[in-house]
Image 1 (cartoon, rainbow, N blue to C red):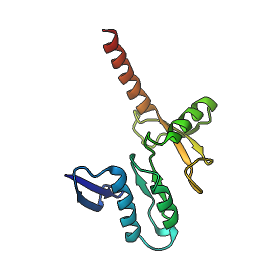
Image 2: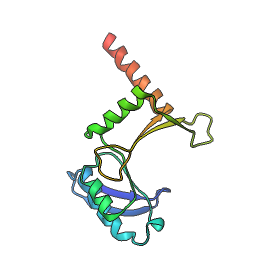
Image 3: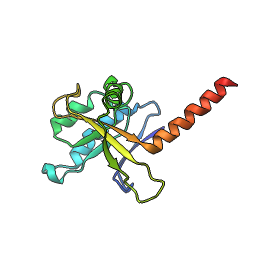
Length: 151
């Protein structure tokens, strides 16, 4: 069994559904977007911005565009554009400093690269976000793998 859960920024549930254990995230995200569109009607300024995690599929973009729903969709690696944008950000060094979003001294520092000319469709932009915390985590993971390979 799988639970499909949509929450607001403080974790308060907006939508929850019991799903078959083999329901894919991509299918449920599309269904959840359609359901939340029904919940939040009104002018664009009063609607929330929906954020969907990875495993989204290409059907999300036209659905969100047609409904005029403001969405942030984290692209999974199955979208080749994600890798292309990351490579372009590093190769062309087009990062914009975003700083820290927490007052904690150990909080990650972020930088962002934005691309408006993408294959995602009209009105969509792609953004690549770099986090010093994630970079440190990935570097530790690579060191561990290299150590195992050496031994």
